[in-house]
Image 1: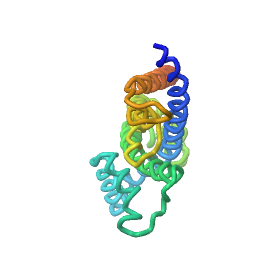
Image 2: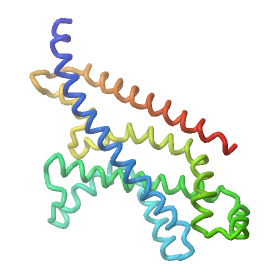
Image 3: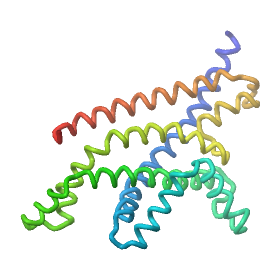
Image 4: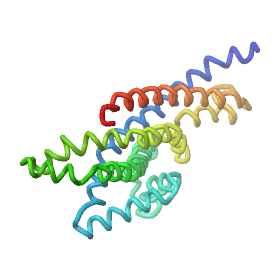
Length: 228
C-alpha cells in the first residue's frame, strides 16, 4: 500500500498529460468532421452523377475499412512510398496525421447521418417553402436544417461517444494519448515497471468523460423536443 501511494501521484500526472492529448484529438476531430461531413453529404446527394458517385465511393472506403489501417496508411505512406515524410517524426506530426485520419473517417460517418436526416424531412415542406417565395437556402436553414438536427442527435450521440474510445487507436502511430501513458508503466516509465493498475485508472477517465457527454447530449435532445 505504501508503494502504491508513492506511485499514485506519478501515475496520475502522466495520465493527465495523456488525457489532455486525448481530449485535444477528440475536439479537433469534432471541429473538423462536423462541417466536412455536411459537405460530403451534399456531395453524395448531388444531382451531378460523377460527383455523387465519387463521394459515395470515398464514404464506402472509409466506412468499410478499419480506422487503425487508415491511421497507418495516412501516417506512413508519404514517407515510405512517396519518400516525402510530410508529417515529420515528432509528437506534433503524429498528432496532425491522427487528426487528419480521424476527421476524414468521422466525417464520412457523419455524412450518412446528415444525409438520412435531410432526406427524412418531408419533401412537401420544401415545396411549400417554394410556393411561399423562399429560396432553397432559406428553406434549408430555416426549415430542413432545424428538423434535421432533431433527427440526427441520437445517432450523432452514439458516434461522439464512440469517438472518445476510438482516440485510443492513435497509439498505433505512437501518439502518446492516455492508454499509451497507462501502458508505459507496464514496460517501465518514470521508475515504475510491471504495473498494470494504471490501465484501470485509464478506464475511469473514459467512464467519467463519456458520462458527462451522455448527460450533455441527453439534455440537448430534450431541448429539441419541440419538434415532436
